[in-house]
Image 1 (cartoon, rainbow, N blue to C red):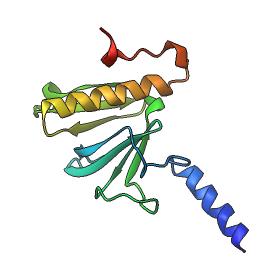
Image 2: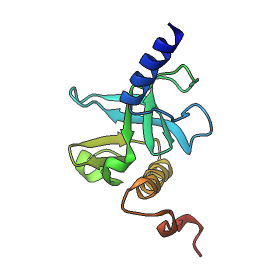
Image 3: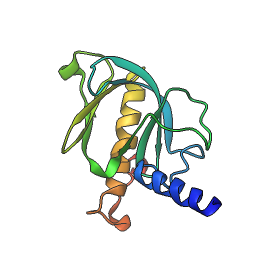
Length: 143
């Protein structure tokens, strides 16, 4: 019976978009962002975690192994991440676009916004299937 439970749980984990991602341990980036809802276009404050090519969000920052994300974006599906103040007429706004949709976020400051854009952008490049590890350039550490 335990093996049946493990098999069912493993299947669910694979379907949820964050299988194998230990989002509770040593994330690449974390922080509060406001995210615009997909259907009802209200803004909600969420705790975001960038880890292993996934951008996950939660209601609270106290994340454990048992936590379940409210949503997950595989960054390999993203085409662009860029500022969106002009589009939304909101300070510190940025957008993340895939082939199917564009999602909007706001940060608490210009520095936070730029840090998120840079972190997500780096993750997009690292997890893109068209780029090999030897082709990745770390622009933050260039002279």
